[in-house]
Length: 314
Image (cartoon, rainbow, N blue to C red):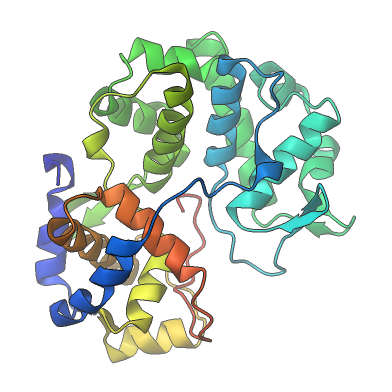
């Protein structure tokens, strides 16, 4: 674990509402070790070949700027190319469907010219079901477009270039320049920085750059996804255990406040489990393990709830 995330041990050691059952972790190891990761994107969601590298990286940036809070009701779905997509896929499908209609959603200048009605054309399903946190998502697209235009000549690729494609530099400037990536807070006296959106975005960009024989530097910094599905899955396996007050809140679908002690302890302990697994399965990186557990969680059909936090960070 890189030193920028060393705070996690303090939280796990002092956690009052969430505990890790270390013996239960070993039961998950064979499943993770045997899991073969392939591209998780359906063929229908491959980017159009007409886009340049700069346009595709801009598109990734805008898509993953909106990669948060998919659980709200009503569940938002989108039909695209004879399939129905949800969760992260619906953001990608929404953008690609709009691009098919000549909406240049990889172009910051184009995004800034869109009216609220035109945004709704992108993010409304069946005329009356609108994407959750619609206003927040529109504001994020507009703010990030303005920053790209003013500081980086409309290109997120230029942002990468100015920071030498180095994740240590990108971590500093991405969280400072683009506030919806600044996933930071305090736990007692301890500074906390999950940077979930930042980590997923740069992991996706690195995958894209591989096709051009390019890579981001210091990829070992990317370590885990601090989201909803992974803690729920680990709790269902009895790896994470919640004390009674938190259990009552989660199991009754009550809100867990953003940056509350409850939320920070849930996310921190889930991340620590991923770190512990990576120590036992050294041939897989933390991000690979995060991805595997996230994919495994999609097959978990139990009726338990995840924690409910309204946030633009995950």
